[in-house]
Image (tube, rainbow, N blue to C red):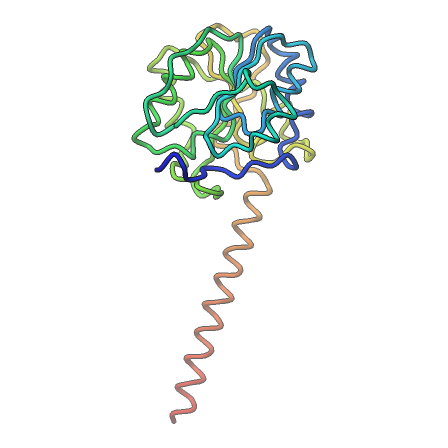
Length: 234
């Protein structure tokens, strides 16, 4: 996919970093955070407000630089082409955030993404769209096991230590409540864990029912038209 083609249209109105970031911060107390696929930098902005001194965001050339400038400094953002060779990690961060980004990256380049993430930190908060979740430029929607296997091969274990904290909070957009887990090369077993693999939220479930109802209506409408046409020919 061309670097110039937008993989995502960034806005500020749906992501609710003020609801999620304090949870992440309270769990890990990071002094440095990298957001890979940072959009307009809103998550990093909240981390900074909570006292994180070092932040860095990566996203494509399509990212809205005017909006980014309202959240993070110019030297706290770098452009990246997810379909080409990833840059070298500038440092090890205490925490990396990679939320709803991986599904925008081709299957062929997915290993490069994971290599880049693990080069940046020992602990990664990660979420990616499930199959048939739907969304703008989703080209690689996968079940959790797809990503878990890749992280496991690199010595990172999945910890389902966030979803039970947020799954009932309707103020947080549903795909974060549905997909957010932690991968780490550290032992995070001291965190309470509730395993919820391939969780499907009510919002996704109902959206698919609505689509199916529309499909049934179209099929029924087409069937009635064909039946009426046959009756008129008699």
